[in-house]
Length: 269
Image (cartoon, rainbow, N blue to C red):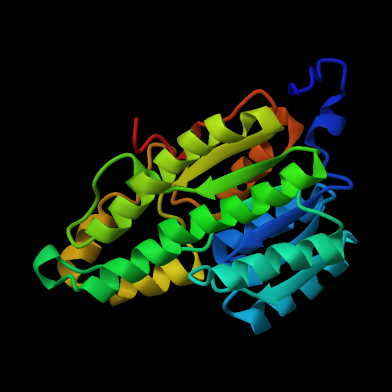
């Protein structure tokens, strides 16, 4: 098998996701909801998987009505392999398959090393790294069975490239792991025409991020606040990241796999 040469396709054809089916984890609000919005606007049918299933259903109804594509929702716990398997099965049953899977769900505790407990560390890894691994495994298996290829998109963070503020050891370690997993799975899945890409956002103004920032100790909040004025003159918003995810999901990026795109206004340059 080989990735198609799409030279003859129009720009509209390349960006279109018409007829494709996507899953977005953590898609009920914030970055995830913005990703669902852009994927649906491009024509994809989308399943939102989120622990906040009521919010996910509300988002699904709103976006389905807005764009006329099928957007559905289910409760998803990415720390539970059975829950991920059920979500993949539901997407296959209700949407007709899986062409795109976006691993967006994540958490970011702030705990200094000498205060870090095993449960906090393990929970962070269970959500941010193991959940991505299991999701990629389950989505890829269904893509392989269908024989039509697909794309896995992992939300990495700039923390996958460097250290950040004190207290973020578990988060930084998990995101470095996701970046490495992205590179490795790209090698393993290329023979099946399955591409694997990462998107690494900087801090963006979302409901979750702003609440988390407000809850941080003053020492950490001041350090993070000092980084929020980017070289491009403003703080990131969810759609900045969603557009990069759309690029990865579409045939615009068809000759890319294994890389992680920085969406950080030059922060990591």
